[in-house]
Image (tube, rainbow, N blue to C red):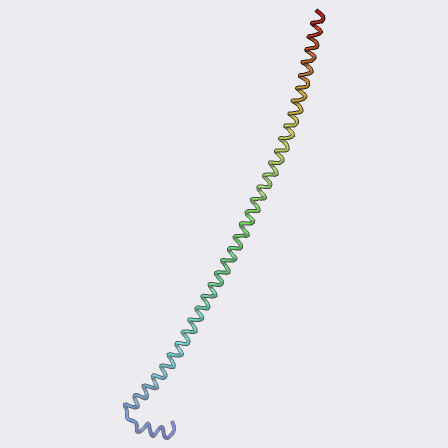
Length: 134
């Protein structure tokens, strides 16, 4: 303190000195409070940013999971389609074989009908010949 302040301070009553000390203490406490408030606000902002960061990470993970599920479903559908294609190919082979056997049976049946007709005609001719001979 300079000489003027020291002289003033020496002649100031003790109650005024007490008030001045209280004012100084209040100013210090006010500054300390402002500093603590600023730290608190900074921490609050930091926590908000952390929450936003976590929300972003969660959203990104959910998006990735959704894409993976879609890929998995698509692969599963492809596998099902492939399996169905194989089943259809097997059925096609079975159908071709059944058609071949049907044609064989039809040809065999026609051959038997022709043979039967020939035998009937032969029998009719033989019967006619018998009739003529008598």
